[in-house]
Image (cartoon, rainbow, N blue to C red; front, top):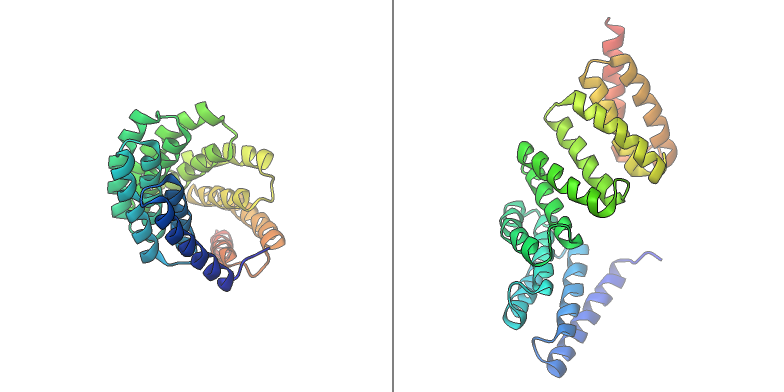
Length: 260
């Protein structure tokens, strides 16, 4: 059942009430209280109360640092969640700085292939991408991909996500041939693992179409774009906002084909 704004407001009020009672009963540094603070912070992010979420997560981290030290796994996890909060609130530079300090410690304490470390490494690459630092992002994605394949396998959704991110960077830097090759292989795996109509698979098909168009293969790109639009309208609905760019691409490709 979907929750509405009133449900979220009640949940936040309840967490805050519980947190006050836990603080009085258990003290300011009890692990149970830390868990409640983390849940409250995540909920505040979800409802768009970014400043309040950052206050809660920063307070939580300071309490954990005093209670268990900076290299305790729980403190490392909170730092990673704080970085995620920075990302979700548009503070990419702060997230990059925090992750740059955090990841070497996670490597040492948890291991390079620990699930939490891998997620932080992926987040670091994604922040680089958001800052348009394409070459660094590509190198970071490729680095974490190797460990994800070793840890999860090549078909795990987490691994597929990183492969899709690599395709997006290759598209952005106009490395069209490599983007085409990698999107072709990725599409085969996503269609098999997620299904051909999964929204993620449909998004990857968009990168594939873009690579075809960038290479000047207009006839193939036009056919693929029309097929994709038909599938997106069937699965997501004709009014879905993400269909507009595809319609424009089809119009451009039609014009280029007619002018030959």
